[in-house]
Length: 585
Image (cartoon, rainbow, N blue to C red; front, side, top):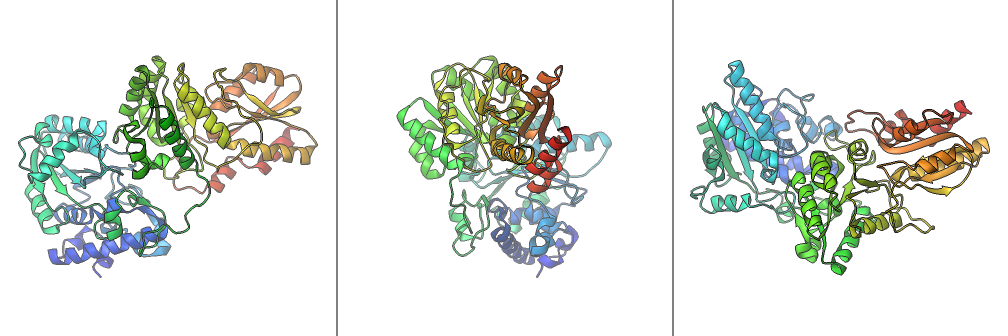
């Protein structure tokens, strides 16, 4: 097998092109087998196997620098740069992560997991090369809908006008984002495909790039020929390659969207192994929004190229019709557009991952909050329990969003409360509202939940006690319930349990009243502590005799972490909190 010889790109260069084709089949088999057992980005990687082989066949990495956009298309690159064991041997699967990582290899130049960045990063590398008098090739690989991202345009604009030397943009055109492409740019790309690159209108040429077209981007020979033409070129150039997403695996070619990223599955049928059969909040909210849109034509659901954030499959998108908007990979645009929709009489709901909301801080502050535009933001995967790759962790949202004036950020603790908060947020017309989707499972309450949240920053006392008060925010509320039971068992104290509900403020009346018969206040929040919600509570009690214990996460970048270990390290466990209380008592 050729794949077993791939200790570095030097070994690849010894192969003939026919042998490279065999290698491509071997790589696809390895990618498929690993994804079937462990999950990961599948369709996007299957489509770019030959292009990656061609890049390493022609260019001289790591001297020549290859930058992958999003870097979820880098699996073949990893195999060819000495990390094949992480794809061939099950015991080594965890040795490599799903994105480029300079800690793994000198062939990786950035840790990247967000999209539309590769051209800008490459511009920086190219400019530094020119300043330092270097002569290496700088290659930016972009595709999977990433050209719809604003930073990609900014990078293209700068590269085509301000880079005087070598800059090679390889555009992997598989006619897909995660789902279908969105944006006027793709009309021109379709025209270029249909005319085999000869259309008079040419996006890349308009930005100042020389242009090459490869009709079959899964043909190693054609790719090598094109890349040889541009190697060591002295000006910016774009190579437009047309590939098939999911190439080589029939199920993936027919189901490109659902196999973009997969959980462990059966190769023969494509069906997920051990699918979760219980209730999931993404589906709960999706079904709620579909019914809401049916009953109110002003309600609009928005996503930014990640329909899976709310499990909006193609079927559900068709049901929603024009009331469903996919803006492409353009989160900043989505928030500003939501402000415009709200100001002109619609009720927009924009849902995406917490990690992607980080890209929209300015738009939330400027367009939404300064203008008090009544849009609803659904913040998904904002939790220690969610995605654990360092590029996608969602634990920084509370300090970021809770400190923007005029924004109301709500933290539901159960299904009924979550839907009630969404309903209020959508129908009210006074505030921009964000709702933090719970991530610790679907819980129900036997109590009535409020339907009106317009009296801002009003905490809800669920159990009234004394001496110790537990303020358990959002999906740490269930931990709070366990904690008060253990306090009773251990210390014989009937503690107070409070559901704060509002992340963006504190209930000063409630906190003041607790001073009368409470000595200790404990806050629990599923996010980083510094600048977070618990510190606001601690700040209130600063001049008083009330002792405050705040529990949350340390400010740090976590990567592929074990949740139990992180919780223990941060003392986010009932038995450890009891130990801390025992010291105080």
